[in-house]
Structure formats: structure tokens, C-alpha cells
Image 1: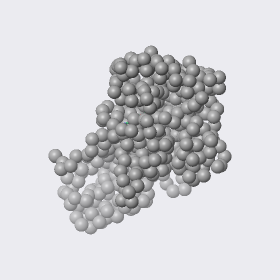
Image 2: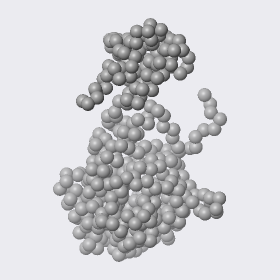
Image 3: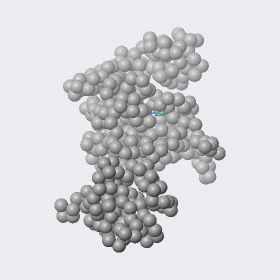
Image 4: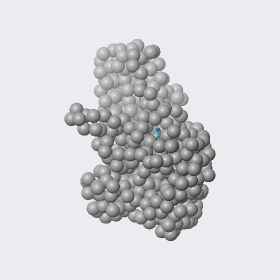
Length: 423
Ligand code: AMP
């Protein structure tokens, strides 16, 4: 049926048949993170725009082109969060989490908003799962982060993950790299796209992220960050790769990944499965906490997009749990029977059994048809005779097998397989 007003482009409706899958994925992700010591945090959907300008970087595409920014009624500039790290870092500082024992390990599930061209795997409202770890500068933390991302994907039944890692150095060695890159790109200025010509003046590393074929070709031949690492950054990168190898996490180094956000230092990584844009991206941010007014403290994190994750699981035929169905449908004939059905259904629900009865005033035949549609496991019909005898026939909707059951919640629940009280 045509609707008067459609949903906005780049957003999704998740229908009852799908939400169970999402709940399963979200629960699995949070539980996997909890086994690694990460505890869930929730932060506001909108923040002061300034937070993202500083925290994500005002030369990034996310900040310059993609934010949903609005003035509230008090004329303050607010932005729907385009990513999680800035808000979580703010919350960690503001709530004093970073003053306690380190590391501080946080996990999150959140909707994010970016005004992007919507296409496969790219939406304007999308859901991210992610983690942040504040405190450690050691490469062991980077390795643990990547191991967690892998564990999440494996636990959800995915195969064929491709992990690429890179180091983009620290502010000191990156300055040398930036100089070399700028000189190299300057000689090819006229071959760059319009946006990249501006990037060349403001933030040349962004050019390595450009999707234009001409710029990609140029980027492929550009100087590599890993050729400019200072001894400290080199040792950190080698240590990370050594740990990944020791943990049997297959990976390759790709000097092309610099990641779209400004706050990264040293480690950056991406995980993809064939056929979809990157599933997971993350890295180390050495200066973000300080930039947002906190102590001089390292952080590291990753985020994965759930739309892409669920799509990858569906592509690969990964298992999802069975949809929950109704345990018992109680059909009824007559007002008194309908009332009894209603009460029984309520009592069974209190006992944790999913039960339904007629709300539409339908005939018994129509009620049973509806019970079929609900895929109810068992059904029973209550009429005058059942009210009189206090018992009814419980029918297994799949096998057709029948047994008699009392019209009282406790015995009925037992007949439906509820374990008896006291074991
Ligand atoms: P980013 O914050 O850009 O590093 O993104 C982290 C992850 O979020 C990506 O690897 C994607 O899985 C997901 N993601 C980012 N942008 C979008 C989008 N517009 N639509 C769907 N997923 C996205």
C-alpha cells in the first residue's frame, strides 16, 4: 500500500522477522567483549558540534561533509553522532573514569548518522558496535583489540576475514612523512581530483583515502608511512605483528590504509570479508584524550557496522537462532470461555510461557487458522464442556499428538514442559 510519507533515504525499517537476528548479534558482540573485560557504556545520540570538530578532525570528510548538524532552540550547534569514539572519550573524561585503575575498557552499541550517498553497505543511519581501551600504549593492547574483533566475527560464524594493518606513526615521524608525501603529490597536483587539490593544502594524507580512480592510482605509488617510522613506532609495529603471528591471526600489512579520521596514531587496521566494504575499522589514538581536555593518555578502539556484519553473515549462511514462537494458543467459544482463556494466558505468561488467545472475536475455525499462522507449538480449545470438566485437549500443532490438560496454570505449564518447582 503506498504510504503518505516514506522513510528518509539511507535509513532502514527493521521488521519483526529481522529484529531477533539483530538482538542475537548485538548480545553476542557485547558478551564477547565482556569476556575480554569490556563493559558497556551508553552516551547521548547528539553532542555539541565542537566535540566532533575537535575529536574527529575538521579536515575529515565526516566533519566537513557528512554531519547532521542543527541549532537547538537555545541556538547551540548540535550534531547527531557520526561515530562513537569522540562521545565516549568525552564521557570517560567527564565522568572521571580515567582517574581510576587503568586500562579502562568500554564497549558500545549505537546508532550513528552520516549524510553519505546511500549505496550497498552505506547508510545515513547505521548501527555500530565498538570498543575503546584507555591507558595502555603497549602493542599488546593493539593485539588484544584485533584479537577481540576477530573473536567477535568468528563467534558469529563468519569466515574468510581479511585483516590489514598499518602504522601511520606518531606526530614526530608523521611530520617527515607528511613533508615527503606533500612534495610527491605536489608534482602530480594537476592529476588530482578537485577535492584532493584542496586536501593537498589542508590534509594531504586524506588523499590516500580518496575513492576517485585517478587519485587511487596516484595514491598507490605514493611514499609509504612505514618507510618513515621512527625507531619507537617501528618497534611498536613489529611487536604488534609479532603478537598477531604468535596468536595465529592471519594478517597483511597495507600501507594504503590511513583511515578517514584524524585522531589515529601508530596502529590502524581494517577487517573485510570479500564482497562488502570494510566491516571493521580501528586504530590507536595517542592524542585524542588530551585534545578533548583529558590527561595525556593513549587510547585504542575499533568499530564495526552492524548492517554490514549482518549482511556478511547472511551472505555466508552463518547460523542465526530460531525465531521465537508462541508456545500455546488457547482458542475459545463463548464469553465465559474467552475470559477463562484470557486469564490462563496471563498466568502462563507470568510463568515465562509465551501464550496467546483470541482478541479479534473470531470463530474457532478462524482462531485455529491464526494459531497456525503464529506457528504456535500447541493449541487448545475451551468451550462449555471444557469449563464444566475443568480439562481440555492440548494438541501439538506439528505432530497432531494430543493429551489432556487441566484448565489451571500450574498443571498446564507442566504439561507444556515447564520444569516442576523445586527441580
Ligand atoms: P569508521 O568510523 O568510518 O571507521 O567506520 C567503522 C565501521 O562502521 C565501518 O567499518 C563500517 O562497518 C561502519 N560504517 C561506517 N560508515 C557507515 C555507513 N555510512 N553505513 C553503514 N556502515 C558504516
